[in-house]
Length: 209
Image 1 (cartoon, rainbow, N blue to C red):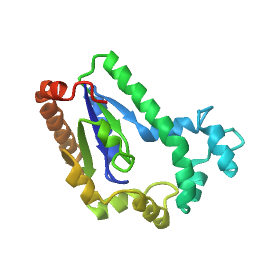
Image 2 (image 1 turned 180 degrees about the vertical axis):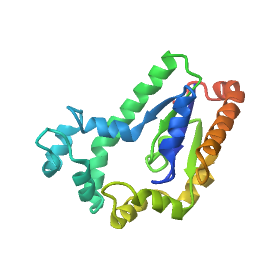
Image 3 (image 1 turned 90 degrees about the vertical axis):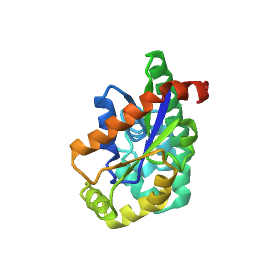
């Protein structure tokens, strides 16, 4: 099975690209969604996060992600503490998803991870796709998000590799500075390309995880 790494800086349109894969019957592991689940409705990370950041625990017993973000994005040491809790948990969930897809006989699946390169998760992927858009469009998209500020936006960018470096390291770059149909066409082309090389990948990367 081909493991496709999907990444891109904030506001590049990665969520739409991931949805294109889902619509084509390809399983997608969403790292951001898993983080949300880990900190909501009895999630495994609630107790550990609340122990270090008690002020983020809500009356409903969940973690207030907005409050948590305002703390960790302003303090690198606290961010590292949070990452030590969340990253291993997300990694485990991702590995479980891979096994599930293999059991289903899937030819390929997608690991949708914003910090794919930053966390070294790209080493577990056969192919990496980076989603791209011009900086002006990126900022426009991000600033439309609820609770976003320029200060928070800049703090998030500092945590990520430069977009140029990501694109240089990628196997494919998807340009989202176009209409949805054109983005979908790019994804279909990539899927067809990977399917053509499926046998080759399977042979040269046998057992790679």
